Image (cartoon, rainbow, N blue to C red; front, side, top):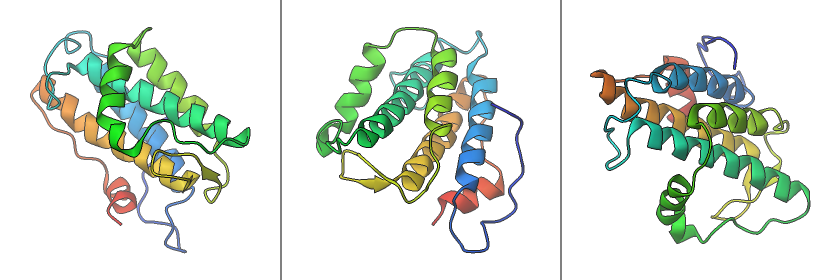
Length: 171
């Protein structure tokens, strides 16, 4: 996914696009550096009852959904992936039904989504209705950063993203 690149500030126009794509890639690398440690896989996280591997399964399924929804939208279908009130149930179902190696699937699905975003203003399907691709990328960045801290507890640490990432997410 490439090396971590510092981001000192938001772009001059105040919009987080396209910096959010590069920062999401960098944060995925950081997350995977922690979550790929076999000694942590079965340990609890701040997302009970999920283990480190379960959180990685969740992120892989989330990025798969993002990529699938972008493809579906580009095929002309803006229908939501599930009802807006079903996010928690969908996340639990996706982790339960997950197959494959979580770390590999997360890297592949995130790449599949991020490699295909271009215009941040492009609309895509979402459970709350059509949203800009840039917002979906920010949702992904938020999930990776938040869950990095959730799994860091398994190693007895915590995670705080670089200030540039915080600057992208706070607004």
